[in-house]
Amino acid sequence: MRAIFGVLSLLLVMAVVGLLVKKQLASTQQAIPTRTLPALATSAPTSSGAESTPAKPVGTVQAQSQQIQQQYKQAIDAAMQQARPVPDEK
Image 1: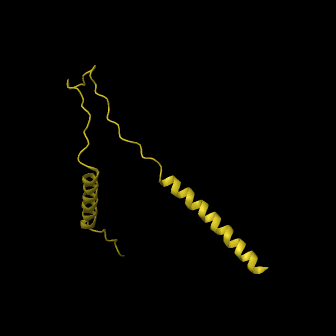
Image 2: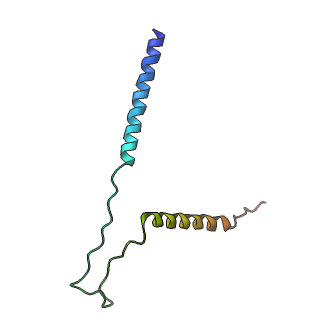
Image 3: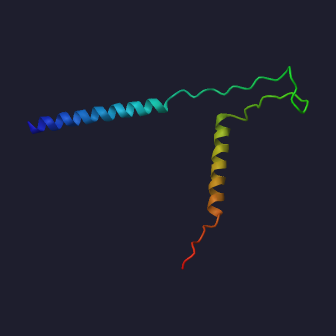
């Protein structure tokens, strides 16, 4: 009898964990909205007198990924170069 309750409780725990994992994975796999370019302002010029143009994407996804990685490494290196404040000892 004790073994039956142990197996049933284990199955119940596994079902709960499975549902939580499924819910967590579903929330992380949502569709990422695509980037849309802003419309050209052809009817009204900007304050400088020139029309605004949309920004063009730079490079491929791989190039953008490498650029982000490089920026992250530079930020970490800059943070590591800063001197740590020394507390005053009395």
